[in-house]
Image (cartoon, rainbow, N blue to C red):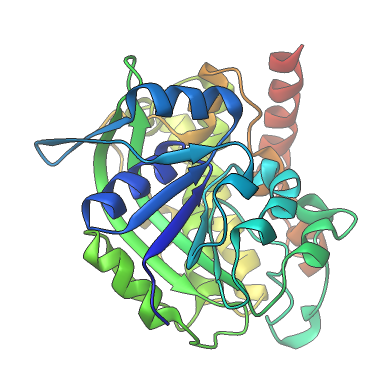
Length: 324
């Protein structure tokens, strides 16, 4: 598989950084964006501050996929909640062999399709109620990416890369087709990229952080250093992480670090989570994808998760009052 042309669908913080780094690495990069975002990028490009350097690049961007045409690789970096409205646009960006790489937060719709054991094939209503995604995304095209990367928009619209740069690539059935080729593309762009042999585990281990920091920060509007600096809030982080860990073990996913190991008693950085950023920008939060699915899988597996349930209720209510 040869990759020269790449389309980023949803050039937000993660996708925008990818577009800039891939363009700088010599790839033919374009983006599919909302009309306002497309106009903004056409006018001034995008700028990234990372590791003491500043990168500014212009690239093609449209709101109509037909104007961009078929690409060698499509990378979807939208918010998970926007995905049902996006997947119908992907065929216009694709050749018959084009992979679709989804780099999203949370648990995907196919998570239990190849999990094995008694939960094999169960569907997740919080993620894909009505099977919209299941019908729209062919298995042979789908590649999943788990990224650990702290990047956010500054007040001037530029991107600030604060920490980490790790990307894991995998398929639902843990097959390896085209993964080495895609990994080589992102390595050339400067990402620490690994081909995963257990993408379920990579997804779940990231969720143990996202299901705690993200919703708690959205409810409190506090940065990560403040969350860990308050002993009662840190205790809630630990409890939700341990509940999530226990649910993963019931699904056959090795537990990884405990909540106590995962969350030190202080944070060296005042990080802004993606859900807190969504609140600040008046955008829908990934409530179901990051904490609602934990509650649903608690019910499926029979593993109690009282603290996750309370946190889901609070976050869901916070989202409704923010929208109002």
